[in-house]
Length: 98
Image 1: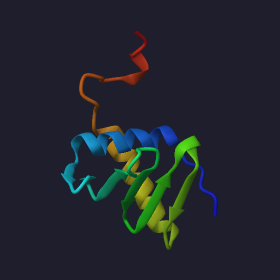
Image 2: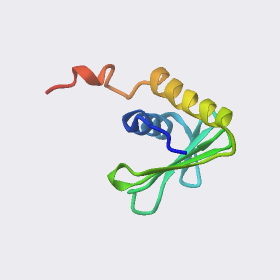
Image 3: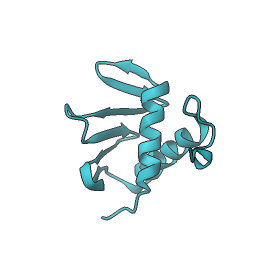
Image 4: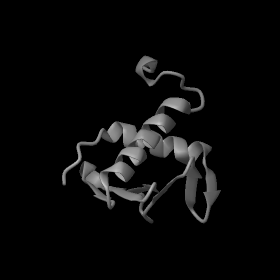
């Protein structure tokens, strides 16, 4: 099953989990989603709601989950984190054209 994913959303959620989440053993957790990278930083992992996502270099991605309900909850949580948390010093990335 192929899922179309907005990778900017995924990376934005990852950054916000890393910034605002609780750090523990190299991983950060925020609102039930855990985010971390591999040792060289090229692969991003997001896990939560019985879903594991791997986003690799060159924007290849892979999901592991058992049912679409879990996947939908996972994606809604990423969207909520992306929407509800702000990067420090940047209120609106669309206005950042310096």
